[in-house]
Image (cartoon, rainbow, N blue to C red):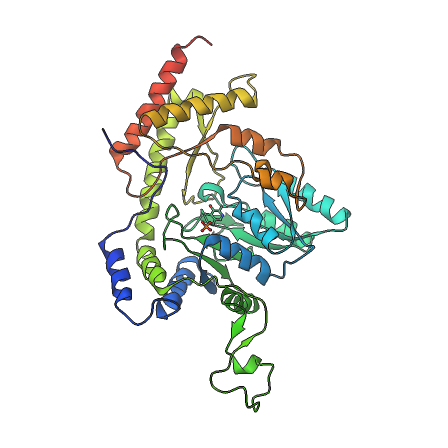
Length: 414
Ligand SMILES: *Cc1c(COP(=O)(O)O)cnc(C)c1O
């Protein structure tokens, strides 16, 4: 039996292993020099001025929201098609979240729906404090437009770039790197094993704002600092010796370890190779999906012009046939999924809409407008396997299984 093909997985080589083992034999297991080294690497790679590495992408979202002043009574805005963490960060901070529709052709936040939601929130007297666009699958959202809408309403922007490390986009003839925060107040990354690079668990916040950077550092470790310039207790106080530190705010233990950052820095050196392989596999999928019989049954997500996609995921949509409804498409998606699974190809669905999760559907802190795009997207989306170590033969196995399904569907009475 050929081995099953997961939708994503890490690629850890001997150099990665050596980096971690070397760290284990050294003096620091947590918060040593490797954390700062990894953060410098992230800054170099993204172009951001500051990076703060933390224990997960979820922790990164929570801290980014807090560091930008989001708190009880505030409203944050996120697309309904994302991993739940994007929305949950607002709730951790004691605020509310307004879920906005997506464009089903891309899965990205629908900018007209976003504009309408911002107008509605302002008219109600609860203007949005934060907007968290998501670069679904690795495609950057139209950041210039999000930035412009945010400025108009006095909101700040945290980019959930968990899928998009290595992606670029163009604004006015200029190319920008995701994470550089040219059109956002902060951006977050995740280093979960399925993401572009891994630290086991891990994440980072990127920002160009020194004050936000300082708040992130404080919040990462209990709100404690050791900066004499900022001490509230007078320097001549006999209790305040060289051992002294102060907790000036309520922070967390969201620290990442040196062990994890040793792996992160080693992985970062391999990012270009990872991206190249992901893009090559995506190109092969795209070419095959452009031909019959697949063309009739499946559509890849549309990619905006000027975007260099990072392809965290390869999402296709099961095409609605003329006059077909959402439920019928969802049933066919299920059939395709089962067929692929029987062939050892483990697809996934990214994502069920956040507003349909039982917790979010019940929570009085979760608000939503109409979400037809999110529902159409969620009924039809399927993520094909995509990871750097995937072989060409495995890619062809996925395509052969899709063709076999399509061949059977063509033959079936309709
Ligand atoms: C992975 C991911 C996160 C963060 O996840 P962690 O597992 O906490 O690192 C946040 N948002 C999106 C869109 C993600 O895919």
